[in-house]
Image (cartoon, rainbow, N blue to C red; front, top):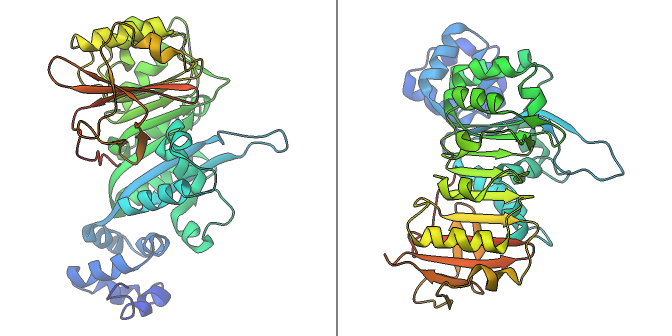
Amino acid sequence: MRIFKLPFTFFRVKFKKNSFKILNLPLVALTNVINQLDIQSVSKLSKTSKKMRINIKNARRKVHKLIIDNHFEYHIDKFHQPLFYQRIILLETKSDVVSAYSYVANQENMNDYILTMYSVDFWIDWFHSINNWNKKQRDQSIFEYRSSKQLLKFLNCFDGIFTIDHLDLIIDKDVLFGDYQSILNHPIFRKCHYIEIGGRDSNISTEEMQFLLNKINVNYGMLVRCELLGSMNNEAMLKIPRLDIFTAEYITLKDLVNMDCEVIKLWRHLFTSQHINQFIHHWMAGAVPKLRKLRLNYFCEPSWVDEILLGVKHSKWDRRRRPQFFCDGLERVDCADGDDIERDDGLHATVIFMHDAINFLVWHDKFSLNNNIK
């Protein structure tokens, strides 16, 4: 329990009528009050006066992450129409991210394979959409809007009163390059380093991709669910640290070898076991030095493992050489059944087949957990 909760109950209930009393508090006391209020109350309090808004900003209430949703739900069945999410999810602390993901991970029939199929933001989205979620906490964490004008009002408010660490954007491509394109000019997008572009019935051109990368410094990652045109110049994406492409039939072996990425996930690709074997030989020679994880989803067969490792010296798991689980932030992969490769410089990698996916995992720091949680 927070120690200031009881003393400031009065302010929670009465701040509209007595805002001047809070306004007269010294900064330290005001900061304590602001930190005890829920986010919705802080937002309302900031609207009581311009001076109050400035004082709240000076209190520097921290927000770990905002997720801007503007997309149709990812998976729909034949029995209902898709929901169109237009909302901001506010995650005040890193532990809020971990708690949401852990809740999903502990659901019945959930496993590491299913979890790693989709992004962490996907599961946070899902967590905030399930019916049995705590309604009070949900109401404090979700801000719905219906237009770009309403969204900008929220962004102005949050940027004006909170210290925000991260901003993630999940948006359908046609929406992004329609009425909502102007939001990218908002200064809060300086905090945006991760974007998911939805719309499986849409496609994105080289010019549109370059425009987006010029507007947003994508130095964490990008997920692309819409179609990449055959004429697409993939070079613009090759330096994104975390790259997840759902329609990757136009990604070539040359593209793969030239990527400066840490994590690569490709779906609906045209790679064969021979291509991946060639890729591993390139990696053995020092290519893709930053790579930690390559995952190829769909069109993969268990027999591929032997073909992928043809001509490559490999061995089964030895716990003295590496851990059982490969950790990537909140995601983890059980590598007990994987085949290990050692490069001439001593760097190890593991090839493991899981359901319909091939994983190539590089152990840059074998015995420490990767805590790159955003």
